[in-house]
Amino acid sequence: AGSRAGRQGGRQARKGHRGAGDYHHTTHNRMGVKNIRVTYTRRHCYRTNSNKIKAVKTPGGRLVGHYLEKRGSVPKCGDCKLALHGIKAVRPAELKRLRQRQKRVSRAYGGSRCASCVRDRIVRAFLIEEQKIVKRVVAQQGAAKKTKSKK
Image 1 (tube, helix red, strand yellow):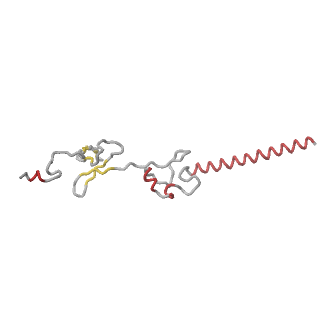
Image 2 (cartoon, helix red, strand yellow):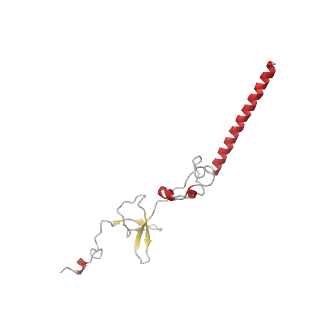
Image 3 (tube, helix red, strand yellow):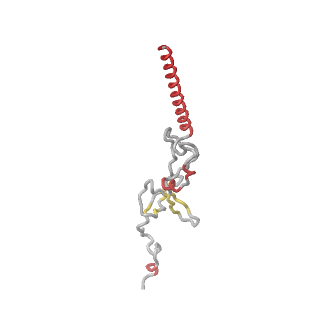
């Protein structure tokens, strides 16, 4: 009854027609040449930070867009804001799934402060304690002098 092309479903029947999901996306390859043959395959059609795609050539010769995930930020020291070593840089949802040993370093304040800041804290605490002891000794010596002078 109908033509053969009309009975076939999919893109072959309507070659020039773009469906609801086919949003054109302009990608740039490494040479900086524009490439408009890659289309978005998901519903989000704007070029935002969360909707980045990379043009990839398949073994069959087609050019398709691979969606890129956002990169995780490196954990930073709370005092000096330097990157912490030994902790993975992952997105927050992925961080939730990591083991405890991958989220921290086996040290006091591991995963929160860097080694040099921890060392500074320890030295500062030690010096403060030393200062308290010196004050106490000086106060005792002053009290001893007062008692001797009264006698």
